Length: 67
Image: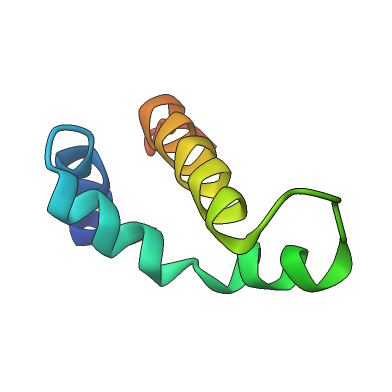
């Protein structure tokens, strides 16, 4: 990961706009999962909400200094 990407990622923790921009960079992941799994009563908005929660958790726990 490049230094600018890491700075943007860390800044996104406290900035909803940056977090959403970062999330949109990886939107293909939940889109692919939506196509693979059909969960009754779970619509596209539910998938994206869960994906955003998982994304925020990952951003908070990410350590760019690790290997």
